Length: 86
Image (cartoon, rainbow, N blue to C red; front, side):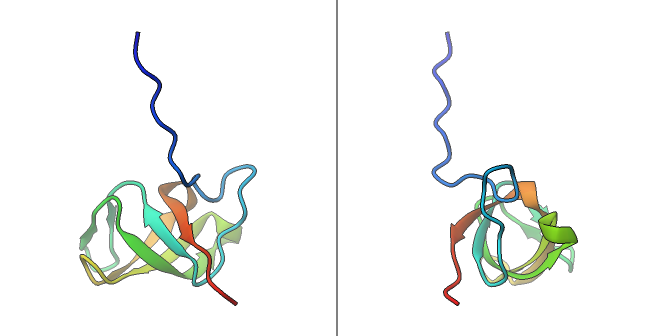
């Protein structure tokens, strides 16, 4: 019998029951994604949402470490890390 997998402390955004992500929120990618300049952003990298597409189905996220790039990521690929203070 397998032990249950621990739940992530932060739920994926964009799913049912979650609050929508807003511009300038900090998010973490759950799997590696390809940046706009063909740079791979590793899973676990944190970035800032700079644009929201299709009513929250995808986001443009700016990453600065460990790579400096922009990436368009689908909502189920990120989890919320920190809300922007507005």
